[in-house]
Image (cartoon, rainbow over all chains, first blue to last red; front, top):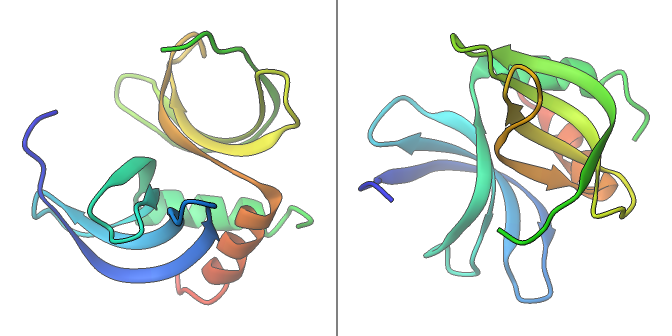
Length: 73
Length: 73
């Protein structure tokens, strides 16, 4: 993997916790010092390791929110 | 990668489209014939290739929706 820097600017929500303590989280993350994006990803208990995930721009998150409002959950 | 089968059961929303035509989508996907989960992921224009993404259970999506309702977007 290329060199990658990131900073979790804001922890918004813990969506779930696995038996081993990894958490799936919604955060605001700045990658490589770029402006923050929404990020849904699994993290190790001390946040030193990350799993696969997706980043979402404001526009993408707005589209996601709009769709979720139409789904019964 | 291990053998992986999947079926997109329902296309719920296209969140964005890249200049090369890849789309970031919210879908209901069944992985390895297990029950469907929500899935946020990038797909090639003909859906033959997938990018990284996250799957979310009903409970995780409910937690995400709850948080999004508290965010101005």
